[in-house]
Length: 193
Image 1 (spheres, rainbow, N blue to C red):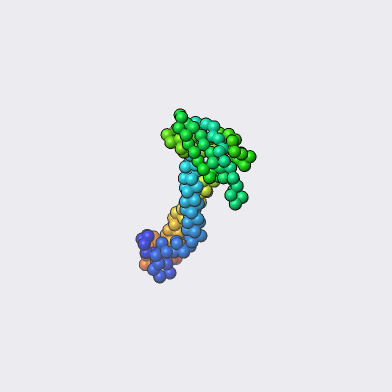
Image 2: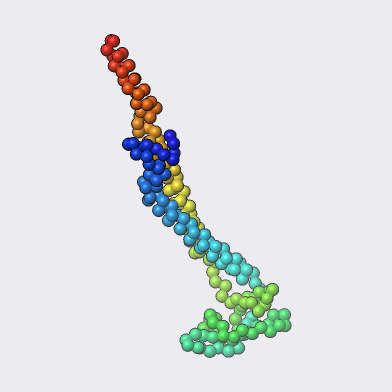
């Protein structure tokens, strides 16, 4: 059977078009699965970067910082604080996000980048499990949807091709002339008995 063109009831149709028309739902599911894959990859990428930052910041050495001033500007607590690393003085102003119970003269722990002590963190946060799990979940669901529907589509193509081959029964193996010749022979055999 020629895959590109097949005859059905005397009309030539393109089998690929027929399969596409009959399998629109599968194609939409495949596109949805690809969307899930893309979302999963983006979220996993974010999770990997967050994990790298988390590990890096947790490896930083810690030191004590001193609050030099504290003021509330438009309902937001702003702090000026300083710390000393190997005799070097570092000062940061208008920092937000420190605990609200810190007043001028209070001390708190920070972690600093040993390669660049001016770079610091005081809020280490938690391990980004949520992004890791969500990314993996989207990725696995996307792979499942795409794989399942592509497999189904391949089977459908195979079934459609077999149906085309099998739909005419003996006619698909014999021409009309050969088939009528067999009918005549079988009638002659039955009349001789």
